[in-house]
Amino acid sequence: MSRWTDGYLDLLCARLAEVKEAERGAMEQAAEALADTLAREGLIYVFGTGHSTALMVDVFYRAGGLVPVCPIFDERVLLHHVPVTETTEWERREAWAAEAFQRSGARAGDALIIISTSGRNGAPVEMARAAKAAQVTVIALTSLRYAESSPSRHSSGKRLHEVADLVLDTRADPGDASVEVPGLPQKAAPMSTALGSAVLQAVVLQTVVNLLERGIRPPVYVSANYPGGDEHNQAVLARYRARLPFL
Image (tube, rainbow, N blue to C red; front, side, top):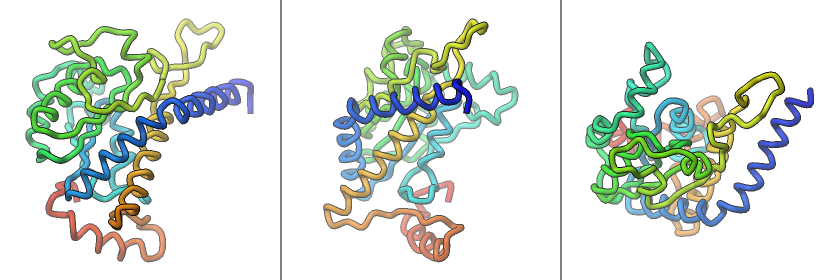
């Protein structure tokens, strides 16, 4: 590898080590909250806009992941929207997010993970406010370094971490890009996706363990490409299919 690829991966590993130490308690709290939700037959909802949707789908319908996970999709903020530049405008608007929450089917006792690295845009903040008003536990996956470097775009003046019940801090850099390259005025190489995925999968794993420790068998997918996967998944999906609209 070149010094640039080595440097990026070294920086990513160092940031993951930082997250591992600093966010251990927050990840354990989030996993306990999710285990509580599933133990009372609730669902875990996930919401993000733009590139945060990559993390939203990373924990949905995923081999080794939890079955009762329901994304809140909205075509206006998914990156196949044409023109894609409009997604930036929609994630800054707030009114539609409360409507999207109402359509999701989430109810008191459920949990909602909201992913926004900057934490400043109107849609994720409004989604969090709507969820909390409905007595849904809100877990924010965000970067406090980023959020605290910029003012909120929500009419309340609040950023996502200031609304959520629990906060998972990815510690991504302001602007997300992380590497200075001579001759380039802006940084390159974002980290939020890699950091966010690691945090979310660690929380999912701890949730699985917490359920087992309570004597509850967690509903976990097996890869459909692995022998026996189809049979396993069909059986476990039968329990949740009526409540998960995308299945």
